[in-house]
Amino acid sequence: MTAGRLHLTAATAVTRASADGSPAGSGAATAGAQASDPGAFDPVTFNAATFNSLLADVRAFVTGPGERYAERIERDGAVPPDLWQDLKSRGYLSLAAPTEYGGLGVPFSKYLELMEWFARSHASIRMIVHVVNGIWRAIDQLATEEQRRRFVLPVVAGDLRAAFTLTEPTAGTGADLRCSVERDGDTYYLSGEKHMITFGVNCDYWLLFARVAGTLGADGTVALMVPRDVPGVTVRSMAETMGVHGTDHAHLVFDRAPVLVANRLGAEGDGLQVALGGFLVPSRISVAMSCVGLACRAQELAVHRATQRVTFGKPLSQRQAISFALAENAADIEAARALVLHAAHEWEAGSDEAPVLSSMAKLVAVDMLTRVTDKALQAHGGLGYWSSSPIERVYRDARAQRFEEGTNEIQKTVIARDLFAHAAEMTW
Ligand SMILES: Cc1cc2nc3c(=O)[nH]c(=O)nc-3n(C[C@H](O)[C@H](O)[C@H](O)COP(=O)(O)OP(=O)(O)OC[C@H]3O[C@@H](n4cnc5c(N)ncnc54)[C@H](O)[C@@H]3O)c2cc1C
Image 1 (cartoon, helix red, strand yellow):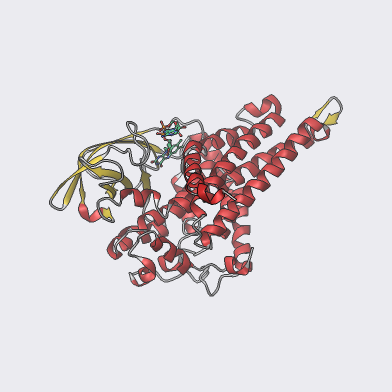
Image 2 (cartoon, rainbow, N blue to C red):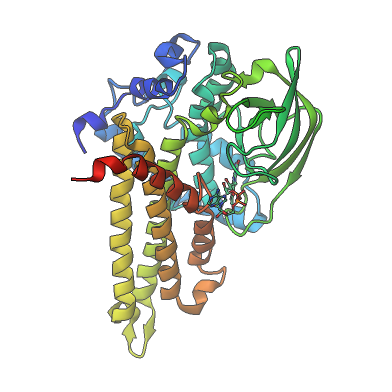
């Protein structure tokens, strides 16, 4: 990694968000942003020693208190409120945002090293850290100064919880969305349904995507910060998931719920830009690195098991069938990590290739995770199928990653579109 990349500044990150159409830019620094934390990674003070100390803290958290939280989450089926508070007080909810916003300003590719460790932890811990450290980018892109003060800075501080609210039961994810608003004066009246919304039950705002009634496609889509206590909404918990236990998910039905026009981010027609614009690429790369971290955990468990379990007089580690499977895992993980970091560096450098690379990284990393967790469980034998084995939780948590930040089918669609857009350049 080059020194230039290591020293990517928070200001660069802010500028990048603006490059997607935001009027914000680094002018946000004057918009009532909080003073930087003395230990923050601002461009002047950031150095490898400070980062290494933070990384050691994260590792100690994941392998110590994180494991105790994991036991509680699995036992109670809920994320304890003190976990949110603990993550906030350790600064883990403010890692990726720039110092001007009150974040630690950890450069993106260094943040991914932390994310790799959080992903070895319980999926709900990884989910909280990933969502809070990313959703501010979506809100920030087209926010006014007043909206930045009201929404972005409190999200970065861990004082305000926003749930990304896009998926609908009766429509495809994206331009197909059906939730709609009708405007009357300074108020929108929101009707329609959303489901599978992470933190959608216990949040302060839904960052919700809808369309102006009567419009089609991307035209007329709007991004709204909808207060959790808005009248005219029915919230149902969708708790019974295969994995990622403890994270709440919501099914929402809106019936002419009033939302102030002042809570719209950007203009009418900008909704999908907020949902899928400058936020999505780093978020996909972060999910791809989560796959790498979770695969590392599966591999550790399998290697340990293979050295302990003796059959027919020899440990499994001395059986070619098992040792080769784990050797394949090791190579698979390294290859995926290299691609994820390549995508991250391209994004940091502002490359046009970053979007397609983020899809490639997510596709490759999540397929790798599927292979690695399958072989890791196999190395455990039948006991791996029991919830008393740590690999059981890892295996079912891994499956959820296939849906986050776009399915494989969506990643392939993005990659294929880019491929054929450059078809003419491929002749020689
Ligand atoms: C644990 C979890 C947490 C989630 N959290 C959130 C959240 O916080 N906010 C949120 O908005 N959503 C959330 N989701 C929803 C998630 O984003 C969707 O599940 C995902 O985008 C796929 O959409 P769908 O479920 O509607 O699948 P469907 O649209 O029903 O698709 C079914 C299958 O068909 C494929 N497919 C669909 N359309 C096409 C097409 N045009 N071309 C090719 N293939 C296609 C899909 O890739 C998929 O494999 C969450 C899901 C899970 C599992």
